[in-house]
Length: 157
Ligand code: ZN
Image (cartoon, rainbow, N blue to C red; front, side, top):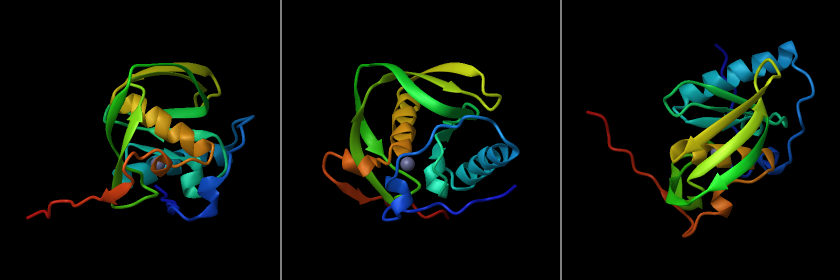
């Protein structure tokens, strides 16, 4: 297990557009494994490669239903609307209200560079949009309706 440093807002790497992955290499396989480890360790539901400083179009997501790896993801279809709190591992301790589609259909490649299609609703739809935005250099804070606020976690006893 290898953890990578999560870049935080203000780091220019988060504002850049990522490049398509053209072939699977050992280096990229290790990157994906490290991204999953880093996401689970940070207790996030998604992580995009630029968040660990790599400008490649790779996203990992797990909303509690198992890991999803998306390479070169593209949104094919969206429907409906949801408005709710959103956070980001690159904006620690903060959240903001963001409106996203309630249904999202995504096409991507998996770790074997085979085409896969995913459909997500609610949290998964939100995660698809949020993570794919990272690949184009966008953070949710640009969309937050009333800016971002501190999140207070209850102390564990
Ligand atoms: Zn994020």
